Length: 390
Image (cartoon, rainbow, N blue to C red):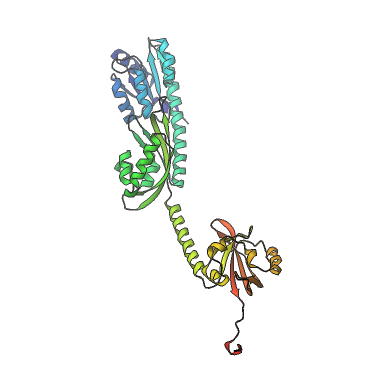
């Protein structure tokens, strides 16, 4: 809740090239109870003063030599990235009021001053400004917490001034303190993995040229030597001529996801090697279409088909007619469920029919439900002693 004390303790900057106007406004405000008032007659100093002090209200004269109030407001917009410009313009020309409001000013006071009106407008504007800041701080805290949980940070770059702003989340995922690394494109690039730097710069140039949106992954080496994986997304704002004016984006730390993906790939590779080199013949098939998805070397040797021939076939082509109904009856299994089909007959490429025992299990294969089959050849070899020699 904003109190009267909060309003009278707000920081105010008075900007006017005429000393008499500055003194009159300062005395009026102090007499009303405002305690934190600064003044300047140099419009070129306003942006630096505001960047340093973050005034709650700026009383700004529009007509000043060297730099008018409109130019000052343009500079202030680069500082007030939240789009709220805490400017109360001062003008003796009524026709400039509408232009000033369109330029971003929130209210105006006329010369010669109506002091009761000045005090009322200042009070109202400071109250609105403090309410806006309170809401901004609340939303900022929620955003920071969300970014912390998601390993996310946001940034913004102004093309004409080359000024760069990083959120606290950027510093957090980079592993550096704000005081140790002023925000800049060059500072960020120094942390990018050398193998990824050229790629990052090419993507950045392509986005600035409007060739494509910026969205890609790269690595960063933190000051402590730890390598982290980042995903960047950004969009570029352009002027009427198509020139880039401002770029903003997000960076997310996806290291844990990349490590999990790598571990999954290694696990899948180990499983593939175990499966392919397993001495027990086996294959994987799509239980919806019965098409082969994978087959191991032992099955290739047993049935006489090449791997390519297997992958162009269905399971039904290996089975004799009398076993097809059994297969169809067991078409669905629960995830992870195993089933021993028992004794059945299969047919080799050369037409030989032989008995087998089948073990099947429902598995996930490359992200789709499938069935793993292991085959035990039940052909009983004839002992050499029983073979009649002719």
